[in-house]
Image 1 (cartoon, rainbow, N blue to C red):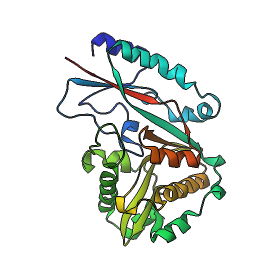
Image 2: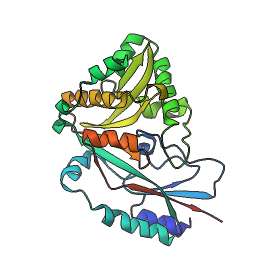
Image 3: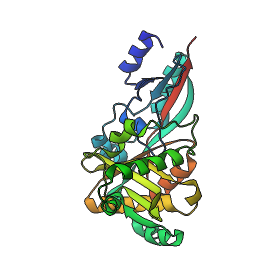
Image 4: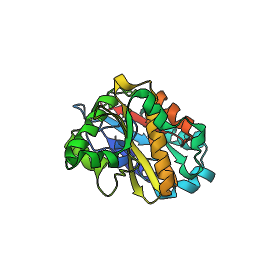
Length: 277
């Protein structure tokens, strides 16, 4: 990408990330399927993210979600034309979605504890499991991370997911000032986490899902939906207004769960790339 192209992209408000660099925003590392550093050995590939990721402020989301949703064609069309003019091709679309927590109606769904009983697991908040485990905070965090590695490997994406080491992302997931233990929910079988949804709260009243995943042998039992229901109920009790998440277009299963729950998707963040010669 030429310096002029970078300057034009920034002037237009386009968040730009280069292969081999850190992702453009912390949100790029925080979703119900992980988007990791594009990295690798090929530093001649440049990726650009066209959309809302880099400059978005969660505190502004409520009015935008309810009243000011832009028309997808108008928003993505101009950015797509910009990318095409500079020789980029689209590789992926990602959707930021938000749920109006206080308007959520749990009565539309089966009791999550009944789902857990039928599956033979225990549902509990991360805070409850942390108290149960005692002083081994690091060990519990590593167990939650290990599940993310296993479950994340099966998430549909244009490119394989390569989770960074635990030490590199510990503060993104488990930072004391943002990790929300009460609305992070796990399913436990024989003392081991088999499904989890991890929540952060970086702005008052606005929560965000960092990761949701289930081990392969535990899928098809409704656990992901049950976990998210428990998280939403806790957030509603605490007075949260919005609950956000991010999914790739190919992740039809998780996007379907979120649509069933009532999440409303923003226009897509479009990923494009260009191979330099």
